[in-house]
Image (cartoon, rainbow, N blue to C red; front, side):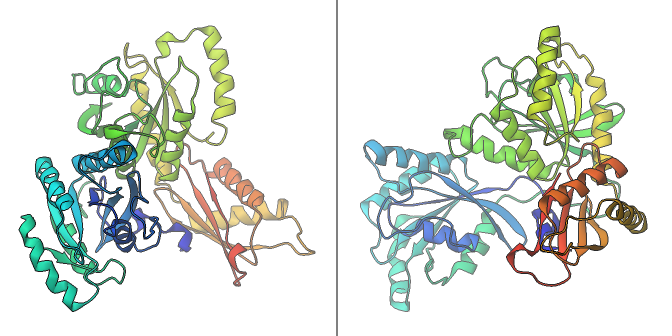
Length: 461
């Protein structure tokens, strides 16, 4: 398998939405340096100047097979004014929505009045707090950490985020403080298929959940964004049990959202990751928006099966249908493979088409093409339409194999790198021959010889 396929789904990690770890503390105690240490790469901005980090910034992290989201925050200060007050407020929001808080103190300075004020704020949150004595770069500084017991947060974890001292033990303790992951059932009958119900605010996600469950499971309000945390619901639809997650609307880009909406968008992303298939609701009475496109992109990039449900069809007249067809052709041309259904959660129109559409998408998502049939088809295709000649030579495809399912992933073993356009051509023909309706597919190239950074290509369908 090509390394292009490395993903959370391929590794021995827990399923379900990733828990959130917030890293907080006063300015310039090394929070961003610690975040870089946790995520294993230099991504958070680090400067020896207080106040470089201004917003909450999330990063994916993993330790000992457990994944989580670590959130870097700006420096917290009491009685802050102007921009500093906004930064402190962002840090407090991070605390309120985290599962575990890592409170960082500079051991070379000791506990300050600001640290003590921060402890009071943390106690009000009633969240598990891990006290970190950072910048313990030598044994003498480690001994200084004893004074931090006075903060009343238990034993200080002495570390050097810069040099990595003590970081492994700290990560072990962070994992121990996280909520228990959902159990993974390896054998036995498969549980209900997991469906993420996603879309921008006020497109009718909660109304649809109530319709398919035949009871009031979710709050329905004309005010956009009523749902904040995902709500799991087991519903019977078309004689089959399904696990639905009604998620908060993705109103803005994650880095532009504020307050609880910001974390609702993080948890929505987690719900998509935990699902097998996503139903993306679009308001058929309104223009397909940039927000709708972002939700669709999130599902495709997560590699989930996809059904697009055009809701509020009862509000669509003949003129709107004509305009909508043109919008679909223009705005959804990159995902012509997505299954589309026209429904009305309010009246119940065509809601019974949802379960068959989900089954078709999931069947495609898990479809496996026999290696013999795949290579017989590919040989005929490349003989009829060979790769264009580049520099007097044309790379040849030697062999192909399906590396995995959910979503279907294919590797082409070649004599050299392929043009991106030719990869897209192969993907399109793959769909024409084998289907994959409702599922993204991935095609990557593995050249026979190393050809440097340009030696691999990948097409997403």
